[in-house]
Each structure stands twice: as structure tokens, then as C-alpha cells.
Image 1: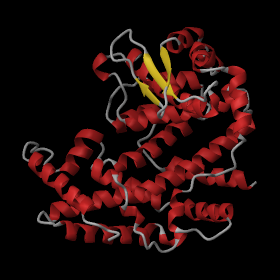
Image 2: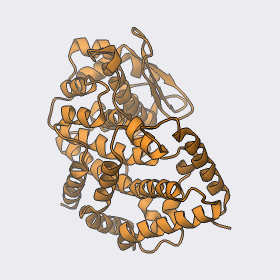
Image 3: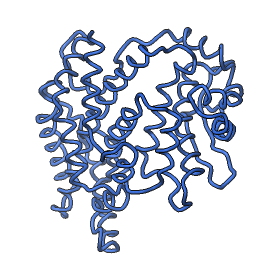
Length: 378
């Protein structure tokens, strides 16, 4: 049975556990209310409207046309996961460029103050921040950890080739460096200890993706025109990723609403409803561009079972991180990094207003994606 009951049995178990907890939170009497009101601090209706607005963006028609031309065929349902916007440079060429500047992870760590000075940080800030990042080579994925106490260093983990750092390790390291800079700034420069940090993961991912996008500049491989082109590519890729995950995010939210309205649901009735929601969402938001979906792939995310109601964080993260990156274009990188990461853990809406002058919005992402398509076509 392609649509077995086991995952829905787990979903029912998660719901029953949530119901047991509900009685202890009279102000937030559902798992949905707690996730949005307590954890995200973003109204449920606003997040829903954000995801629907994203999926209804007119630029998606142009994106589908771009993908069709890129693939040379009509789009199919699994193409919602396509992300290879352009052909990448040969790995050997990129590895050699990294090796010319950083022989290995140790040299990358030693040169971090130099890297930050090259990106516009003052000598004092470059030394203060660059010398407080410890680089560790690991076999797994990249990771960044903030200092847990005053005076402690941040940790950066990345991968490496056998005898050199390599492009993949360096690219990951630049992503993690963005996290580390946020972590150090939001720990060091926030004026009240109780407000240290940032409101949510989207805020730190914004700086991770921003600094990752600067990897080629650090290696001296990117001029102004290349920077503009890379921003166009990143905008298109982020729009595609945000739209891909917005569908499952809505499905999960609608399913939890249905569960609270049908508290005697069985795994069989839950499965039927999840598939029905997936079909409705696909018909409304995806079928025009990707054709009919016989697989109901919007319902396939395991996060719905392992991490209940987490999926919208990915959509919000894509939107907020791009909004910050878009705002910072043409501005002094070091100054804005320090200013924004020093705001503190206010509510996300207030944090975004101080950071970029407006609340969370998908409009900059949709606009930049449209402009990016125009640039790549020219």
C-alpha cells in the first residue's frame, strides 16, 4: 500500500499528546496556537496569508517557463525540487582557487580577520570577531555554535578534502561564518543580556546565506557584474525553494486544523483527509505549471511526523532571509551586519521593522526573482 497507515498512526499519537498539553495552556489552548503564538511569535493568519501570497505570485508563470526551457521538456511534479539554475564551474577549478588562498581549515581560521577586513569590517571588529571563531573539520554537515558564556569563542564546523579545504568545504564554511558573525554580534553588541540572540532561525539564516554568497568575492573571482548575476540566481533559487515548501507547510497547517475539528479521527480518516488536502493544494497552486500529480508529493514530508508544525519555518525562513539580503544590497556590509544582528530578541515583526523598515513580506523575493529572470534572459 503506497499510502500505508503507520505514519498516520504516529500523527494521531502526536495529536493526542498535544491535546494532553492543551489543558496546561489556557491562553494558547492548541498546538497550533502555541507554535505560532509562543514559539514563532507570528500570527497564524499572517503566516498563512504569506504562504498563499507567495504561491499566487505572478512571477511563478515566468519561473515555470524558465524551468521548462532549462530542462528542455514539459515540467513534471517532481520538478518542484529542481534547483540547478545554471551550470556550475568545474570542481577542479574551484578547488584550485580555494587552495591558492587557504591551504586547509587551519589557514582559513588564521586568515579570518583578513577575510573580514576584505569584506569591509574595521580592523578592530575584524580582529575581535575573526579571532573568536574556532574552525573544526568534520565528516558531517556544516554547523555553527554560538558562544555559551562571555569570553567563549564560536565554533565553525565544515568538511574538507583529504589534503585541502576544497570548494565545498570553503563554501560551507562561508555559510557557517555568517552564522558565527550573527552569533558573536548578537552576543557581544546587544545592549541587554536578556535580549541576546535573534528572534528565530530565519534571522540567522539570512546572514548565513548572505556570507555564503560572498564566497567567490573572498577568493577574488567575482566582479560587480558577477555579483549582480549571482544575486539574480540566488533570488530565483530562493523563490523556487520557498514555493516548493509552502505547499507542504499549508497542508500541515490545514491538517492540524482538521484534527482539532475532528478529534475522533482514525489513521484511515486522517490519511484520506491529508491526501484530499494535498490534491486540493496541488490543483490550486501547482497543476498549472507542473501538471497533474498522481503521487500526492505535497503530503510526503516526514517533518510532519518528526517535527510537528515546523514546516512553515522553512517558508518563513526563505522569505525573511531574502528580504534582509535584498535590503543590504548596495549598503555597507559590515555596518549593516553589526547593526541588524545587534537589535536583540524582539518579536520578529518588530525586529524586521528595525532591520529593514517593514514587516515580513514576500514582495522583495518575488520582485527580485522577476528581475533575476530578466537579467538571465538578457
